[in-house]
Structures are given as structure tokens and as C-alpha cells.
Length: 79
Image (cartoon, rainbow, N blue to C red; front, side, top):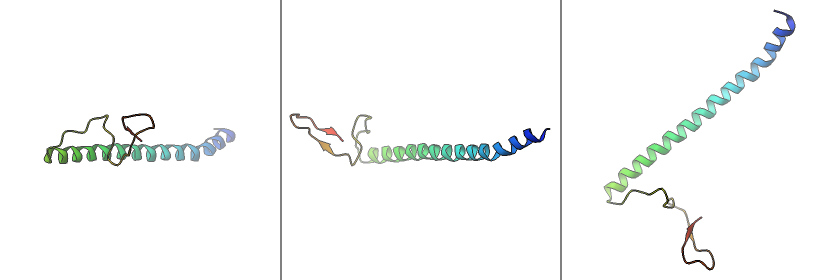
């Protein structure tokens, strides 16, 4: 191998290694967030069933969202 090619490989290796490490970290964060949300939704569905409440629909505003009625309107919208 020529010295130039070897120098180029050594120059790009740290950048590639950090890129792969960054990718794994972000991937694990996204996966853990998805799994945590799924577990939370399962627990919430179980608790709603225990209390006899209907399942939460996809269109229902999330808990803690404020209902605001825009001026000139009679129906509230989630913020």
C-alpha cells in the first residue's frame, strides 16, 4: 500500500467511527422512546379498562391539552 492511501485511510477512520457511534446512539434513543411510549399506552389502556372508561381515540386531545374556543367559533379546538 502506498503511504498516501494509508494516510487517507487513517484520516477518514475516526470520522467514520464517530459517525457509526452517533448513528447507534440516536437509533437506541429512538427505539427506547418508541418502546416506552408503547408501554405507557398499554398501561393507560389497562387503567382505563379498570375504571370502565372507553378506550382513548386517536382524535381525542391528549391529557393536559388546553381547549380553546377561537373568537367567532362555537367548537373548542386542542392547542
